[in-house]
Amino acid sequence: MKEQLYTIPLMDALRADEECPFCFIRRNLEQHAIDFTLGSGASYMEDDIRAQTDKAGFCREHYRQMFVYGNRLGSALIMETHLKKMSTELKKQMDHYSSGSKPSLVGRLRRTGGPGETEKNNVSAWISWQLGSCYICEQI
Image 1 (cartoon, rainbow, N blue to C red):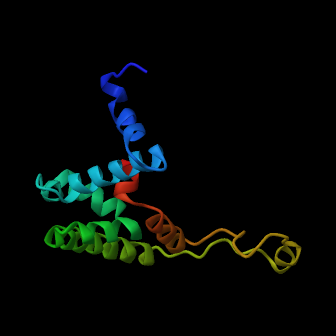
Image 2: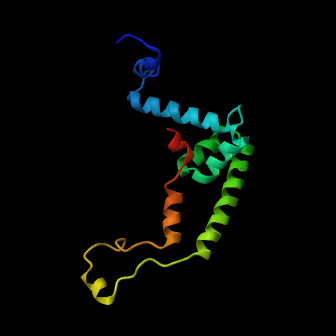
Image 3: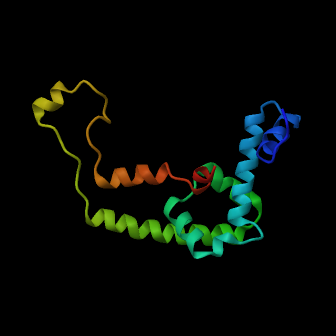
């Protein structure tokens, strides 16, 4: 294959002495996203990036990778503003709490699905969304 500008990362992955070129590319993308978030450019100090990280948060694996990265002050600042935003959003969700729709007694007896079949309330839906959201996963 002729090497073009857009094929360089793929060629590097194929030339690397790795088991899987796709895993190599994913690790490079993860490292680039963590470098962008916490690196020398200090993008975590920019308002638009901070707003995105506050909204999305990070998954457990990427929190760990950010901690290992070494910029603990940047990680702490990101976590502080993210937790403040989460606590205010949780208070809003609790103020507007509404339980999910509950079926009647006959509806519960006829139900054939598992326990998660009924609608969730707004707080549990918000928590599920927060747990599935990660800024770095979205960047990848």
